[in-house]
Figure 1: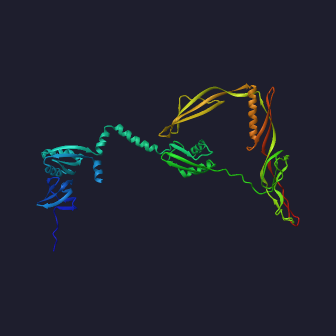
Figure 2: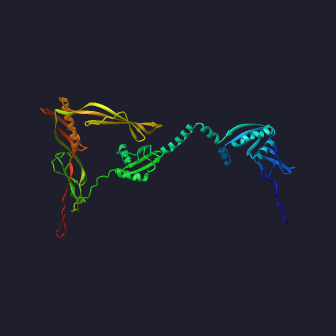
Figure 3: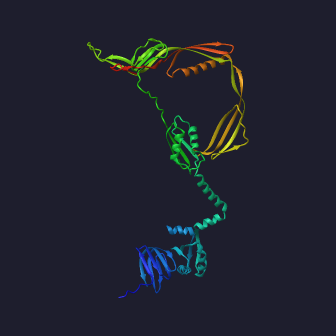
Length: 73
Length: 409
């Protein structure tokens, strides 16, 4: 059986302190307790507290802070 | 850490955004602007951007209807910009640093420790000859080679070490102890009297004494003999074995002797009179001697006194100072001495002669002085009664014959 290649945005969680998002299309909303990121057709809502955007480029975002949950909508 | 250093080297600005932050950030990143550490502070967002990209944020801020404010700018470009307007200060700083590193390649202080009988001047002069002096370059300085050369220059040194501490060279010295006089051989000898006298003390370390305290001895008389025999068991009445000794006599014989002295001093004395004084001053600057003012030429019959005053900084001597050479011009004149002056000079001459002729251990018990004034000067006659060492070694020519009558010496 052929495996389907996994393309599209990539989210990497490092413990509950850091989230690395590759392939994001932009920031929808940004707050200390919530960051909403557009990933093509879906949106990733990262909730937590004391969060900050450590790095933000055209396709990549690294979010630091205390992460409680990652929700897709 | 690396990213922090990189940002500081390229320069960065801290900005503050109020309004539609998300839209602003999206437009900014789409315009290839690199931002980092963006965080929310109440209603505003604070972030960082590279210094050369900050200007582009203004246009984006207008487009997104946000309020943009620069909180502060940091980094190397901002420092160098300040210096670019003050080139003299920057140049001076660079020159100061270069000069500091250049000057730290020289020796600026030489310390000498461990001296006992040698003088500082002797050691410093020898060190100067081997290339260790204030103002010398440290580049060619080799401590081990310098130590070897120093021992050759000053044989009285047993051990020497050169240690460097920044621009200071410390010379640690250990002087050699004088080798004691060795008595070579055990040639049989006696101790005889060098002059006549009355014995006050006699001590025979080896040998047998032939005189006692209170005896009057003549010049050449035997005092301690190195050749003698003694009974091994003197208390046994039967014929006891006799042991013969052939030794080098050693000991001390002190006797009371009489010495006569006669000294004469002339009436007319040649003295030096100072006729003038001049001073030459020099500025000493890192080993260079710079004259201050016009220099005086040195003539004959001149006494020269040198005075060197070096500056001190934080308790350490630095190689900057003033050197003064005082020239005192003298002329010879003849002076007629008074009676008192002649007596004083005669006594002084007598004491100098006694110091030369008498041993250190000699003690003068009694002296009588007789001054006689003549046309040419003053004559002093002295009779001294003193206690001194009178024993001297005299070798004995010892003959040995074997049973066949062959003679050995």
